[in-house]
Amino acid sequence: MAVSLLLQQCIQLYTSHLQIADLTFCKSMSMSESTCKCNSSTGDLRPVSNLLHPFRFHAEDVVESKKVVQLHWYMHDTPFNGPAPSAVPVTAYNASDFQNELKNFLFGQIYVFDDPLTQQSPPTSASFGRAQGTYSFVSREEFVAYVSYTVTIQTGTYKGSTLNILGANPNAKPVKTCAIAGGTGHFILARGILTSQVLNLFGPFNASATLLNQATIYLD
Image 1 (tube, one colour):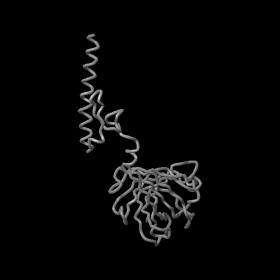
Image 2 (tube, rainbow, N blue to C red; image 1 turned 30 degrees about the vertical axis):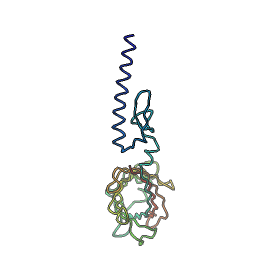
Image 3 (cartoon, rainbow, N blue to C red; image 1 turned 90 degrees about the horizontal axis):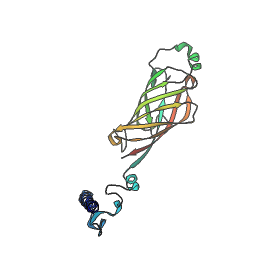
Image 4 (cartoon, rainbow, N blue to C red; image 1 turned 60 degrees about the vertical axis):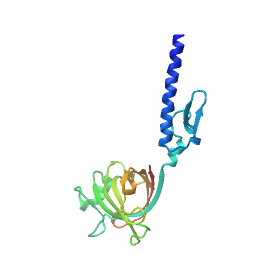
């Protein structure tokens, strides 16, 4: 009998705490009384959408709170473009025997680049921004460039915002994928995927390229 009475008191105390917590939750979420439901058997007041748990949100509510931004631009990388290349090596190598370097897949070579980005594929089309960072060749078995750079947008709605891009790019893949890991401005705490597709190769050793970059960006 004493055990039964103690259990009943515990249930009443738990119910009382739930009621207070749920009332506070309703007020904090600016819910009207019509969005809450009173359980007549326990006096428990809680949001209808959270009957199983006073603080459990529906998955669809979380999805709806996220914003997806899709952007695309064209990147022009010209490491051997006469006196003003957009990418230069920062590690020593035998420039007079570049063919031998190619046989070794440029392993160990690091480049710093400052590539122009445009809104259309021609290099002379309207500017989109700049891509600035490094790429290094990291494989002994194939051409794989590990990239780490920042895209700075210089026009449009997201002018002044940046995106941080990183990942390994096997040159043999027609479409390469990198991670978007944060940014600034509109893209603070952003995450997403950047795909890159080479549209054409040109210049000495076919080392210069125009790439189509397409970004899918998720914001909280």
